[in-house]
Amino acid sequence: MSLTAFSSLLGTSPLRKTTHVAVMSMGLLLSGCFSVGHPFPAGHVSAIRIGETTQNDIYTMFGTPWRTGLDNGMKTWAYGDYQYSLFEGNSAEDLVVKFDQHGRVSSFSFNTSKRSK
Image 1 (cartoon, rainbow, N blue to C red):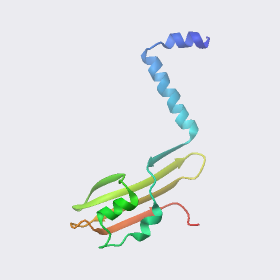
Image 2 (image 1 turned 90 degrees about the horizontal axis):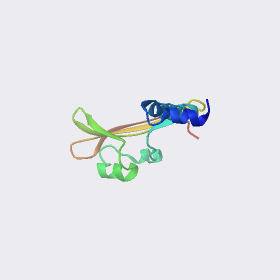
Image 3 (image 1 turned 90 degrees about the vertical axis):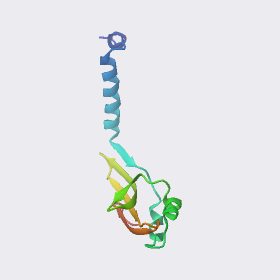
Image 4 (image 1 turned 45 degrees about the vertical axis):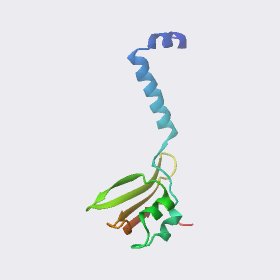
């Protein structure tokens, strides 16, 4: 069957839509990588001071959080950058900051799979 005949067979039918989705999915699979979250300046983590750094300071250092939420009634902001690859090593960095009732950092955790240089 020629490409033209195959194209006309697909037309605007559900088969054509399914084929488009399948082709796009194969492209993603063949590229072998995807990411979740967004990069943030992990080098600024050392500047965070519990009881001193404010919510505004965190926003200035890291930008808009990737996720926000509550943990035991305390506001939390999360920053994450997760890179997954079939052909190269995976990497992940995440920062979770908890704020007290006055908008100051009460605790934070930073984790990375990237090796120090």
